[in-house]
Length: 371
Ligand code: SF4
Ligand code: SF4
Ligand code: SF4
Image 1 (spheres, helix red, strand yellow):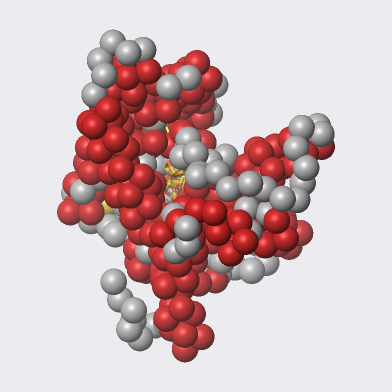
Image 2 (cartoon, rainbow, N blue to C red):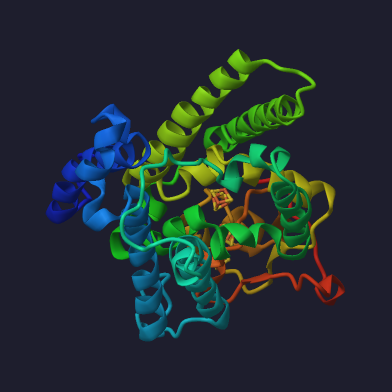
């Protein structure tokens, strides 16, 4: 962490003093209100206007994501790089449209307003219910319901085969915040300056596979527990406590969001998220045609590498000593989420996405793994 980084402005430093404590307090009240007050006092203490902490948290979250998307779309200029006059590309326009729609419709309107509009519950006066941690990013929910199974093991792999991990930059609720904050003035500096890069950072990505192994084990136990074939309540309870506190709260929330200013916006997506590890395996073994391709225009400017929120050294596929390599990479050798930042920032149009449904239109030469 570099909280005293001299390149930060005074206002950013002041913001950082409050940011991490505020994140901790917000998440603890949101997820564990009974750590502060008895459960019968949660609604009178933390439920403003009769609405739950979950409602207010998601209102704030969705408000930030959607207002940033609107700002980018209305401005019509690229959110990447210093050229403030360059028009936004169709790819980026569609990406931010998708983020806006997915965040507003799927993660806000449907869970919070649709039940009320259908008349199945009053809008004000939520009763206290401990949060049901059913996020699909934790994978184990694929073992607990038919819908979860279809989502994790059918829909997501199909989407990876067609579009790579674009799910992470176009749709996922966690990715929506990372993607929009990552193109703000401060957020973009956090990405370019603080994203872990290099060999060690790359090797540490293995942590994600360890979390995936845990998720699959936990999912199997929940499945068997539900069917009463094996009943190990203490083991299930211990694993659930580990999942809720260590993975969900500490890694996913506090480090995942709280470390934005110190490690870039995708530390959870790169080192934690079990679904991302599963998507990488799907992409690798299903031979997803999703690729980033470099062409002969490359001038060796290296801007693409600085812009990647996943720490991929894009330039090593594009040139060696400023001589174009015509390289390509995809999920077989990188955690690329298809955000398009590297493509957008390149001033000489040396990078593009391979056409996914018609891959034979692009001739490819695979570059060596980056050194
Ligand atoms: S890596 Fe996981 S948390 Fe991040 S955007 Fe992708 S699915 Fe969501
Ligand atoms: S691809 Fe573009 S940004 Fe990357 S090194 Fe080549 S010229 Fe520079
Ligand atoms: S390689 Fe390019 S498209 Fe892939 S995650 Fe990095 S910046 Fe985004």
